[in-house]
Length: 376
Image 1 (cartoon, rainbow, N blue to C red):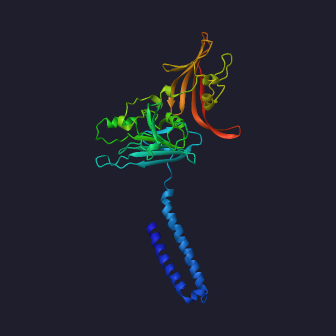
Image 2 (cartoon, rainbow, N blue to C red):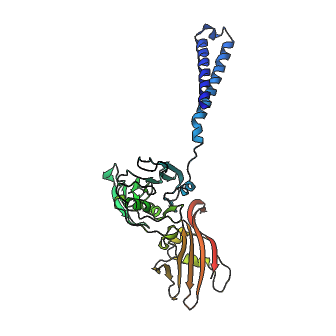
Image 3 (cartoon, rainbow, N blue to C red):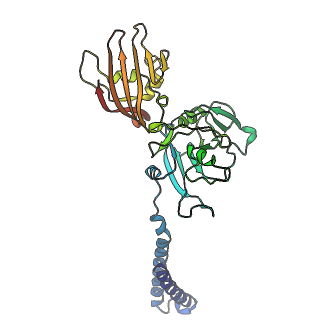
């Protein structure tokens, strides 16, 4: 149908062009024939109509192909990683899903998705996630090698190798690149043999511009799989030296939740009272910065429990993670004031971003929001 329309417009265009050309070359165009100007105006109108409809036909497929969203990544069978923490000002800018070429000896009916995500502040700061299936090279390369240096950062999954510029640990970096990461599916499929083609396995690459190394490390530490709640966590290492992986129920391990036990003390009421929860939303940014109120000197990991010993009382506050799915957690919290009574409760909550104003200026915080509370 579109070809027929274009053909029809093409005929009309040729006719109008011929009429306009004839009128222009004729002496009558200079005013002898008054209807000549009318003919030219009609030709222009038809030309503009043709241009508009042709442009509409050209851009119509784009209108039918909306950009992907994070929810679309949940529908993919591969493991996609997203951060739960972002540097102030970064917002989701683009999500893209493409499909890798199917090799001749692979199932031609099985699509092989790839994904990429970009966050940005609309200026110079970005955080980007890329994926690949085969044919990767070393990402730890930069054109300006003399002004770049490498380092290793800690992550919840293991050591991660970076290259960045300019040199120096402090200050915002023009560019930060982490080497490729094997996800657990890739490890499993590559273990079948060097010539095997991955189906579910992917390499994942992370990079940034305009942020500090500390901010980059914090984003990396918040990465988690999106979608499949039973997706195994990967150990980010250079793709050529992938380590083993462990399957963790609900996407994360108990150690991945780093919240001071005193936070949950603010949610529970006193023993002499009866109404809980008291606080239902807590600013975790403030908790991390207020080292006097949330002193970490008495913190220790005791098996599944993160324990805070209350000074001078012999009491404690502690919690352990029962369930963890993305940014949704369920914990058991216990508290003892130094005597024989230990109280316990089950708390469900989510950790989300909140946009607030402080001293008249907008800011984004990480907030713990209580969803359910059960006193034991």
